[in-house]
Length: 200
Ligand code: TMP
Image 1: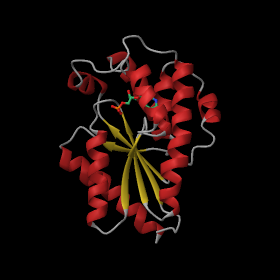
Image 2 (image 1 turned 180 degrees about the vertical axis):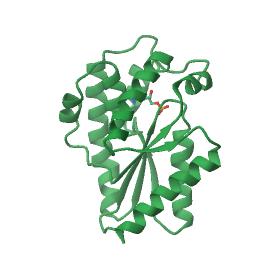
Image 3 (image 1 turned 90 degrees about the vertical axis):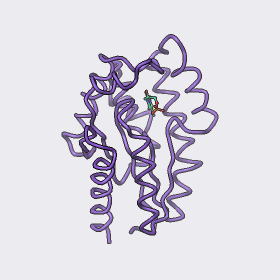
Image 4 (image 1 turned 180 degrees about the horizontal axis):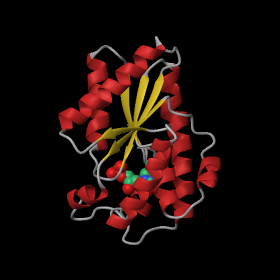
């Protein structure tokens, strides 16, 4: 493994099981002796907590521009305060959502992906980015009753379309998330261990 640590992010639609899978990956890596840590976006910092209150759990959706700027600001702090220091210590950082969520969600809301890239230019690039793919129809059923402003079928379909662009250009590795929790966890672990093997 590289001295600077390894940065992995796990992406997917709301309700795709990504948080469970991110936590399982950290647990399985630790069991194998890797110093892995879990982290999440929106972050646990001030801006992340503000986003949850102001953007996600509000009755009306905020403008996509404001969302993108807030998520980018939160990400900058997340990278500076949590991700970069842990990577410096040689840890494996596994983030439950990262910049691809901004491309997918704010991109699906109509924003230019190039602009989203520009405002996120300080975000360190993940070494490995995984997309847990679950059908939009399935996640929307799982998410009833609705918790956040992003969780309707049309939005989830558009979000998946953007994620799939990154799968097609190989920036994101797609894992079939429609299987059992164990099967999905095994598939994610396999991809990660293969990636680690190729580094050594
Ligand atoms: P979660 O905590 O269930 O993953 O929900 C976070 C929500 O925030 C989810 O609907 C996706 C959204 N989100 C964005 O729209 N843009 C972003 O950059 C990030 C990190 C999350």
